Image 1 (cartoon, rainbow, N blue to C red):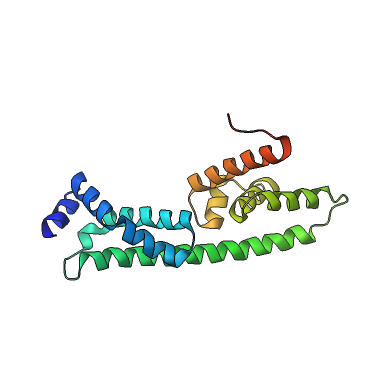
Image 2: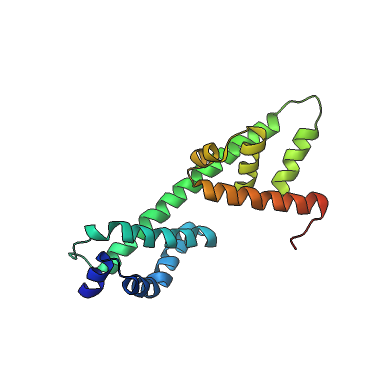
Length: 172
């Protein structure tokens, strides 16, 4: 194991692959048991290995490597749980906004309710921020404590779902 740690510190690809394949399932299991969501668990796994490589030089070998790696995964899973709670709080606030929005016509309220019906919570919030609040992708990412690429991907997936819902368009 010491040689493997030295190779990780030297950024040798074979060492990373060895650790990845040895611990992937265990880290996924720990992450999934905490976050209860497949996509978020996969994100935690990837972030765990990124964080491992970023902080491998801090590992001194005093404790078991597996325990050190799992503590990274647990901390990232806890952060993901906090992020989800914040998103749900924000989503509940946005639901109040939608419910209380007063307009001369009810078409906007109806549209917002339909959006909520065909998108998941995260996508609905992104559409709401980008279209209704006119937030940039950067501001939306900041508000939701996520990356711009996640926001853009979710936004374009949501647009695709909305096109399918309203126009019957399908991916070719």
